[in-house]
Structures are given as C-alpha cells and as structure tokens.
Length: 185
Image: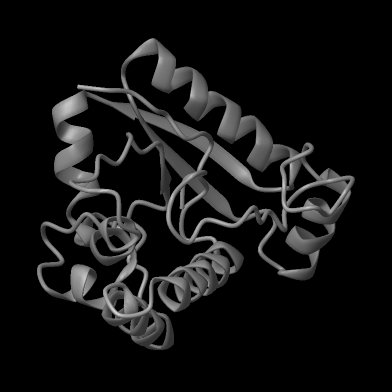
C-alpha cells in the first residue's frame, strides 16, 4: 500500500541497514545467499519491457541485477500494445516484466488488493487479468474480505487487517514496487 494510505505501515524486509520498515538500500549479500539457497541460479529468465527507452533502461537494469544474482537473464523489448496484450493474458507465461502504474478509483486498500492480488482476479478471466503475477493466496483473500467488511463498522480494525494483508503479500513478493508515483488529474 502506498504511504499515507489507510492500512499502510512502513515495512521493507528486503533492505540493508536499519530494520525500521524503510528502504535503506539493497541487501545484496542476503539476496545472493537466498538465490543460491533456492537452487534456481543459472536458470534462464526473460525480462519483458516496452520498446521505449525509459522502460528498456529499467529492463536492462533488472537483467544486470538478475545476472549479478547468478541468473541467465535476457531482455525482451516489445511494442507497447503487444506488451500489454501479452501481460494481461496469463497464458503468455511472462516470467518478469516492467509494469506501469496502477490507478485506483478511490482511496481504499481494496482497490489495490482485489484487482492485482486476489484469486478471483486471476481465475475470473485468465486471458484478461490485471493480476499479472498470477498470484492467489486463499488465506490472504479471507483476510482482505475481513478487512473490507470491517471498514464501515470498525475502521481501526480494518486498517490493522489491511496492514496484515500488505505485510503478507510483501513477504511473498508477487510484485516488486520500485516507486509510488503521486499526481492529480
């Protein structure tokens, strides 16, 4: 969840230095160790990106990062329209890609969780899903339902449950947010 959002609590288990919930830089030693322990190093990984120079640069960065962790990574830049057609279709089996921003309709945690991480969002229409990660955790769906149900009657409990949902999803890392953009329309 973005900062200053209902249920947001600073939490970053992937940082070096102080463990105060904030990002302080990558813990590359831990990342390399975890990659080795996973027995997945030397696996080929294809990183999809848009043809545009900015997105291609981000994709190239991810390729270098994966190579540093021991993977055989390659960049696969495609035209903007093709990228989204493939990314929304889970049958494409894209291993990793650069995603655009997620625009929400109203400031509620459910506008992040339900479309991007719920089992329903993935299985409802796998050929056209915003759940690009193919993520499904029934326990997390249950917690999200409890949080949403509590929003009108017990907002404090709802915020606490959304923070729990956010923490569990962060630990499972179906997405790796690079930044939170703020703007007005």
